[in-house]
Amino acid sequence: MRIRSLGRRLLARQSQDTNTAAPAIGPATRIVDLLVVPLADRTADASAAAVVDSFTDDLHVALARLPGLSVARALVDVGEARCEARPDRPVEGRWRLSGEIHGDVAGAGSRLRFDLRPASGRARWAGHFADCDPDYAVILGAAVIEVADALGVAPSLAPSVTDLHGRRGGPAYLAVLQGRHYASQPGRRRLEQARRLFRDAATLDSDYARAWAELAGCSARIYAYSVAEEGLRNEAAEAVARALALAPEHPGSHVAAGLVAMLFDRWGDAQAHFGRALALQPDHYNALYQFGRACMHQGEPRRAAELYRVAAGVMPHEYQATLLAAQAYAQLDDEVQARAWTREGVARVSRHHQAFPDDGRALSMGAAAFLRLGECAAARDWINRALALDPEDIAVHYNAACLYARLGDVDTALACLERLELREMVNRGWVEQDPDLTALRGHPRFEALLTALRD
Image 1 (cartoon, one colour):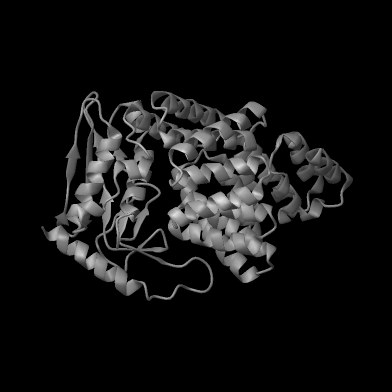
Image 2: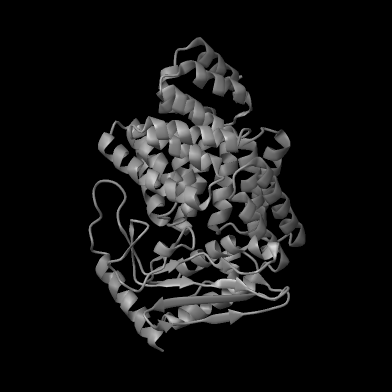
């Protein structure tokens, strides 16, 4: 097959590109052999639509574990993400591509088809999978093996479904995919919907480690960012204990354990779990990102900046690690790096906003980035739209407080924090360390808020 020669060329290119020095300032251009473009949903089935993005994530993770290949995931199925196999063609500003894998989910009634194609010129591979009651875990495993074979990678080296998920999922895996779809969207209502689906998955298969890990992480997020109900924290702790017992060598179990440890202010345990996840999978985005957050909480901005830098390279479309890297460099008084990362963050969050215009948290983080670049009008516009979209979201209101504090509008910033009832927030260390709140320090109302947090 001609695609096998593509596989050999990709492997040869990768060995050459490993000697390319990364730029010293800002994010480096990433050499990517294969780009996984989100599968296009061509069904009228809402349950199928809910799994497309999550399945794309898992396809990316699985292919990234093939030896000798660099694989990235595109944000959306848009024109600039499609490319011929030309190493000089940029994608989303920071990638150089040699090939891509894309496809669609299509079907009549309950029949679905996955069509996945790595392409270079006219050389391509196509795989079709159809079933009236599809087992997505089986489809994923089969697709990865066929892609590996098409690229000339021994199928025996492809990760198994058990390796990827701790256990073959079946209906439980479908519930996890649906849950992750809602967990990736803004707002507590969607997080609660995700939590119910993760609980359903754990009920369907009580030995499914990933279901327990996802439930733990989701409950931890609701507790930390929406409402500090003790039942949520206990649920997260119980779920992560199950995940670790079932899959102690799975990175997802340790990421969830790190998140839960943060809820109990066990920062040493959190860092140990994130470190273990990275030892198991060095390019695990969530482990890098959450490890960085833990370091910022502990007053270690230099270590956090390096973790965010690596995370931003792992997912070149993701804006959060990029913007937090800028914040860490600002705290280190490294204005050159801070400005470079802020510019990159603005570019990424702008692309994200185009794809997901109702994400208030992204708008609020983008507003802060615009302010760092001196674009005050854009900053005010984005924060006002964020507050209108998510009037109950703690993160949005907190980011608004940070923005107004940096604008020197102390009263409005304090009003934002007071409306949040900060005593319900778990991230006390973040409030105490956050450089964006410097203008408020020493103000009696702010000190009263900190006192309430410590009580």
